[in-house]
Amino acid sequence: MIVITERCVGCAICMLVCPAEAIRVEGKAEVNIEKCESCKKCLIYCPINAVSWVE
Amino acid sequence: MRVAVIGAGLGGLLTAALLSEKGYEVEVFEKLPFFGGRFTNFNYKGYEITTGALHMIPHGSKGPLAKLLKKAGAKIEIVDSKPNGTALYRGEEIVVNRKSFPLKSRLMFGFYYLKNLFREVKLSEVESRLDDFSAKFLRAFLGWSLSVTPSQVTFSEVYPIYEATYEFGGPGIPVGGCKSVINALIEVIKSNDCKLERNTVRAIRKENFGLSVHFYRRESKKFEVVISDIGPIETCRLTELKLPELSESRGIKYSIALEEPLIDHTSVMFTLETRRICGINQVTNADPNLGKKHFLMAHQPMITSNVKFEIAEGLRDLKEILKGYKYELLAIQSFSDGWPVNRAKIGCDCKNETSIKGLYLVGDGAKGDDIEVDGIALGVERVVKKIEKEVVL
Image 1 (cartoon, rainbow over the protein chains, first blue to last red):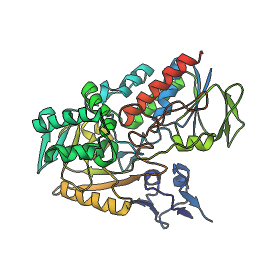
Image 2: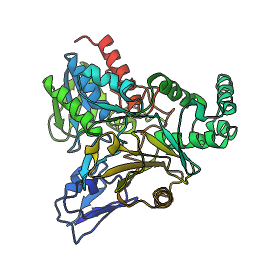
Image 3: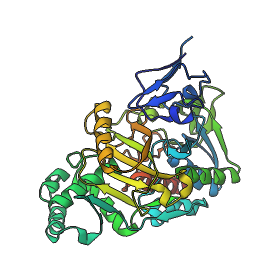
Image 4: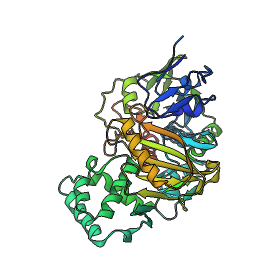
């Protein structure tokens, strides 16, 4: 499962690259787990390592 | 002569392109799966939304960045703003030029220029002596271009921007947005047989022959020169350099899709009577391909450290400005800490040279005397000149 950590500053790059439009950002990113396809693109694109994957 | 560029942001790529044109053997290393850092864009719902910057070059086609892009052979078209800027004041949009400011305030500005030669003058002091329009314009201009308020900066820090605006003129928008600048630079680098590689650097070490760069995913490599475009803090982490005292600037950017146009020109409309929002530009006026419909970018500085509160204030402003318009909020992006508006607030920029021989800093933590990407270009120009002078091919 994708988890957004406290480090998130809200730059929204994850939202821009998410193919499922599962991310909403207002100050911090929030993932809609129902919509998330677990492609991990947000994790790879996050410039400050604020996204992690938890089994 | 081998040069490593760490970080493929605008500063890194511009340096790489210029040096590769001169025949240096340049390799660029980027940890992220995209190039351009905070100066590129992604298509989102039919709009070219940036990773940080505004689709804007502060001094347009005659400024420092445009000059260096030309020198590097990067083919970019920049649409210069006409007029230089406007101001939304008391419900009316006014074209801003010298004469928009009352004579008394212009004289006051001159008075503070002289005063600043003898002692440090906070801009808030100047602000308090100006007429309402001029004071509000100053506040909006600083918030839009530097993400700071008048109390955070001094006269001497901001004066070079005034001079640069006088010399080079107002802003411009690159056709294709920030990304077109990045792509043009990459093309130059590749055409000179230099490489761009996705890799994360874990250390830079001083050696007898020059510098060695250590990676996570492959063996280390030797270089005579290393250019760091990852900011002063990260650079210190990779080396044994001492961390400089730094303060960054923080801001919030709103991307908005509009049915009917709000602005009828290609420049910035500074918003003077707002809580937070300092300016808006309708970038599709310069390049219709930047959005499906009309595309607005609005910007505000962060006054408090409460991001949620700052966004709520900004949204209240936008609601008032866009009253009667049909619009969709595409993205709210806040920039701070690891991904700030400016790694170094104006006046705090680090030197381009470091105490390690052969290691240079570029990017927005090491700008020259100008704002945003034009400041980055001045820093890059300094580094390239230095390398050419000191290091023979």
